[in-house]
Length: 400
Image (cartoon, rainbow, N blue to C red; front, side, top):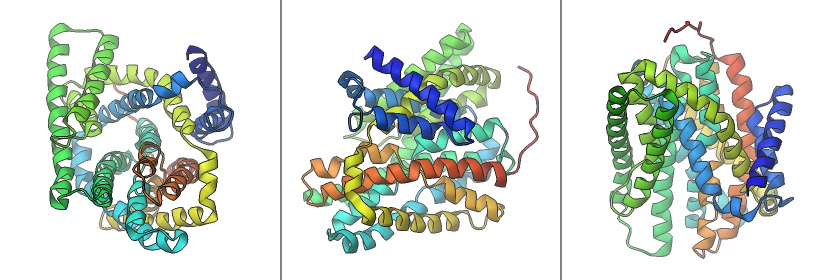
């Protein structure tokens, strides 16, 4: 396994360098390396690495979400909060409904199967979006109107909303007694409980660090470890209450920034160094989940479905940002930022097939195809439009 890790790190760094030289996002190159090295193409990754792939991806996602939380400021959140809540559900509803209506005509599946497919495709990928938004925040691009923060917050809640809808639809298919109202109430419950537990964890960590005066490296290790425990807690509480660990992790960073800005910046600096390694693991291992043969099985009809679904999603995203102070280009940037799919589709795309659904193979094929089509296109679109359309804020030197 150690040899596999060394190989994907070297190839990932090389791909990152080549793609950045071509003025393209390095993560696209890492995704391609993962696809090529994965079990469905060259199969040069050890099975042991693939077995722990999900855990490694979670740790990498935790690192970037902590960095995101350590960049979230109260005034910016107050400014974009209402719009972020709208963006967390309206675009997903538009895309899910579009796919539900269209998929039966393209694939001959039932409307329930189509709705389950729509709930899988309707999730945006934090793994792709969050690093790019943090890059914009670091370079003060679009920060005067809080655009990167808006998309950071909205994309995290979007996943909570979509997964709850997916669970409801899967329960209906299985014929189990599913109280839809109670399930829908899990959305605000998950958000609120995630924020509450994250706030508590962040405050306790702040008090411990203030009292014991730990070095920045040790503080960073402790914060990562506590964040991993939050994901474990989410799994343990799953059958009793709903809790969003991802929002809780971002809240930990937010609380620490509010309570001790100097401390937060020190931890953020250390995390930025850890991210160099974690980024490679995240995107290469996400790429390794992509089965080219399965995606090919979706055919042209799958590509048509994905792109028409994105049109529905784009309409929903644009409606969500209407009435804000964003100009036309900034609104279109938000639309493009909601294109990438990867994390959720890789995680739950095979669940319907495993559940014995008649349309399970089609659902998996289209889910995998959506990653191949939207992750690279979305990442490239975000980078190019962000550079050209978002206003650069003058960077103020900070002394800590």
